Length: 340
Image (cartoon, rainbow, N blue to C red; front, side):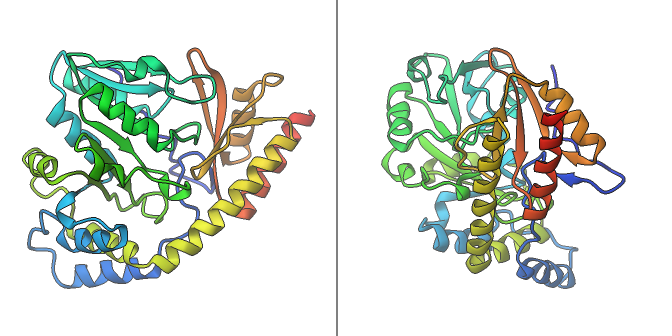
């Protein structure tokens, strides 16, 4: 099998990193303070296996009962727990294409069949995505999607769950930059689950903390499969402090959305076609220039963006929303590349 290849993480030198959808701003100051207190209280004991402090505060913020929340070592851990629990060897795991590359790896690890169903040209789910199958055990829907930043509306998700008649996981890693969430659908249909991460909108990619919202019968079953202590004491403390600071979150979201709009407008002005993004990145492409060469040229100038080339879709550039200063540098280099 081919393993999942993460975005490039340079180990030496100074780069402008716009390639892995990290938050360009430091997290809430409350996070470091909470981690320090947790470390000073002693690390010789095991952490709370259910991350109760986080579940209680997240439940208040999201309007969800804490018993509906399962915490993980990033949302990737949640995805792993789900596939280990629900998809056996020879069974089917469905997800749209192009989307998150890790889904294929998770299917391979289970010896499962990965059924990739292409999006329509306007990034909607096609009719074949809604078809049930006796061997279909789990459907994954990244919403907003990566690399496009586009969203599937909530009515389509609800219809999907009813028609495929198996668990549907809505991967909302980027939803805090969107206008709507599928969280309310979890109450309407027990087959619908939602997972989220604190890596993006809370600036905690280096901490590794994510969570799942599902009905209690599913949460109880998944607890049997997760690692005993899959979230450490420092990450629980930091994540709880982060989600508690909603003032920081609101201000950070505002800055990201403002810069995202500017980035999309300027890319269009430079001749790129840009998908309307509901995430903290934009997906753009053009056919008159080699995008791989542009990616390499920016890398030589120590600016990292993500170059992707999908079978049936062609090449494109995914550019994370950085600070205004970082985006200004990136746009100037893109303009220079287009004018040569």
